[in-house]
Image 1 (tube, rainbow, N blue to C red):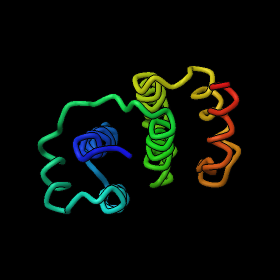
Image 2 (spheres, rainbow, N blue to C red; image 1 turned 90 degrees about the vertical axis):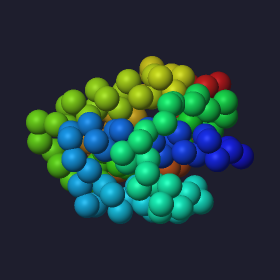
Image 3 (cartoon, helix red, strand yellow; image 1 turned 135 degrees about the vertical axis):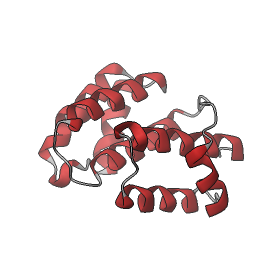
Image 4 (cartoon, rainbow, N blue to C red; image 1 turned 180 degrees about the vertical axis):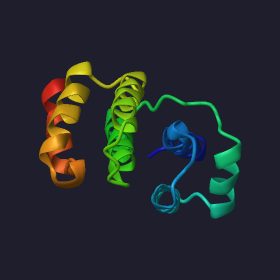
Length: 136
C-alpha cells in the first residue's frame, strides 16, 4: 500500500494534468475530489494541493503505476472534450506514463484502443491485460 506522501504526490500529479489546459473544470474537480476521498485525503489537503503542488514521487509498485495511469486516462476523457486540446492531452498522458516507468508499447496500445470504447474510457480489465502482456 502506498503512504500518505505518495498519495499526495499522485493527487498533485492529477491536478497538474487537469490544469494543463489552464483551468480545472467543475467535472474534473469533482472527479479529483472523488479520487482524493478514495485515497483518504481530506478536502482541505486536496484544496491546498491545487495551489501548492508537491514534487512527483515515483511509485515502486508497477500495479499502482498502472492504476494511476488509468486515473489519468479517465481524467483526460471525463469531460468528453474532443477539441484541439485532445491531441495535446494525449501527448501529455503519454509523457506522464513514460515518466512513471510504464512501457512505451503498453501506453501506445492503450491510447490507440481508447477511441474504440464509449467515451474513450478503457475498461480496467482491458488496461490491465495490456500492461500484463507487455510486462511479461
